[in-house]
Length: 303
Image 1 (cartoon, rainbow, N blue to C red):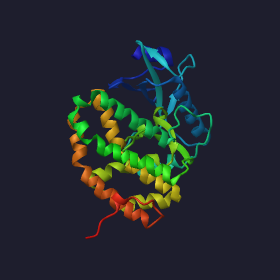
Image 2: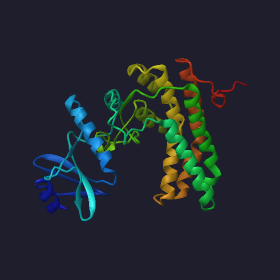
Image 3: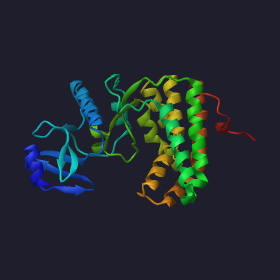
Image 4: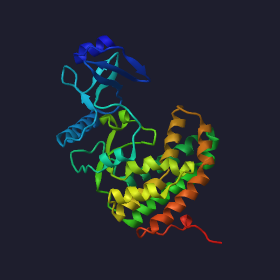
């Protein structure tokens, strides 16, 4: 790998450390990660465009580095790689990092391959695909079969809310497919992980785990809403995104791809009571701030 990096990028790396499909090294006192890339070239070109978009505005992120042939992708041993120059030291992200990136508005019709803001369409497609899959192979997965209707029901509730509220999802910014409270800046500021979506996406994914772990803190939600001046439509989108069971769907896909065992879902089942309790409390708290849609099953019953 050292010879390939030297040849394609005119760099002389010091010791190279391999971690999964990534190679970390230092060359000329700069830090780099050589990342395996399996996406489409069109998506990579849009991510490179976003990197330049930020640089022009003097908003810094890690840099996709072209090879000596001015190409974004380098093929080494029949595998495709992209070289990332790391601009600052690695650490765990903070909520301020999300505010920093999510408040950079991006409205560009050129970006279509990594634009993920059509939630209603994407979620309907996801639900239909999973229901079709389980009709074919459901007998092989007892745990999934037992709990799938619960999470599909929540997803359909989210789709219904988007339809009934007719919320415009057009305040788009740089976001990420998935983040959480353990995401590092190496990942967060890596353009390979950039997508375009509503600016509430990242904060909802960042805080979602709290709802399952029983660590709900309404101050964290309210402070973010106020500090970042989210309007009522954005607050509703934030809530709907929190309600949407993305974590379950991620686990479902990993199980079918045989990356994890089906028993991993048992943790999600055990945490469902925490989730329901906390999402109901959040719903109540947000109703004090804006006119939230009427969702009967989320109302806290008084006895």
